[in-house]
Image 1 (tube, rainbow, N blue to C red):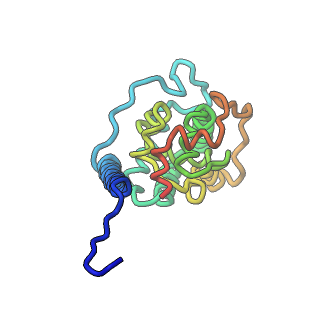
Image 2 (image 1 turned 60 degrees about the vertical axis):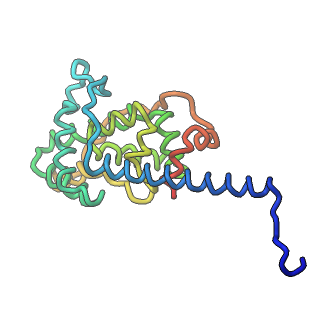
Image 3 (image 1 turned 180 degrees about the vertical axis):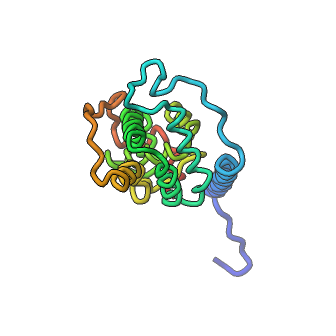
Length: 228
């Protein structure tokens, strides 16, 4: 090209460049909006109280299980002292359980197992798969345990509307969220000097059809944000 001549780009190429820039700016705005909404929901504005059906209705509760209100009261007590880390919350929960007798420890442990079994839901698993970029059966159990430690309202609202994980969830459940299911058993060992008797339980039955792994990422594309 001779000196002094101006380089002109085709109109179509210029239009495409503008569209890409606009798309990037829109994506950045959405990312920032989600980021600030997550901060607000997680630290300042709790979810509304859940008043829908529970997984352990009082009218049909077996005697060997705690009332749900008592179970969630212990979870909430641990939350107030362990918001900085999951392991810190489990330590606080262990201290709360240390004040219980062995019978109540068994009832707490069996209530936890009941809630884990009843929340074995395909829709929730599909969302956890999208959040974590993959989620094995063990990972999904750790995820449900983590979800319980977030309190009754967040547990039930997320079970009912899994997309709420965009505001309340986090990734890498499999790596750091194991342990809730062992807390009561450890305290029982300290008090009784023996293992907690195993409860008879039926195998988990998945609620809803098992999902296709690729479909999980397509159904919840917004939850991919948490992977990054």
